[in-house]
Length: 100
Image (cartoon, rainbow, N blue to C red; front, side, top):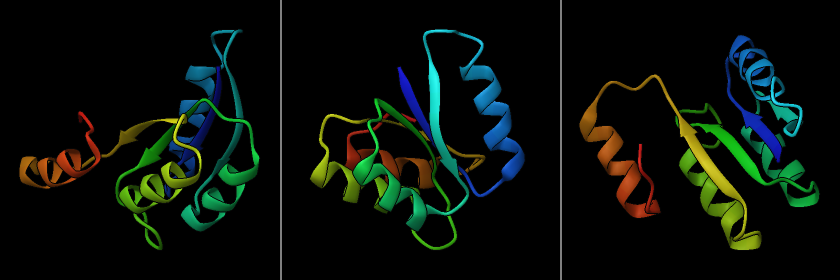
């Protein structure tokens, strides 16, 4: 599988990359701490799964998922977050059909 990682915390990017690439069938084909950069790259890269942080500074993870899904509906997303607030998680999961 080809993965792409989006998180504003640089250390999280590398931790997730190391976890993913422990399986030799999986590859991280890109990662960034900028959601606008991710949007541009995801439009041209061949990606199966995107790990995306819910709370990003410029373009939220939810908005990123919506924009990419419009153009590439087959990409799968895993929303990641340190958010503890269950109401906030519920607000995100129902409009996108996500499970957090």
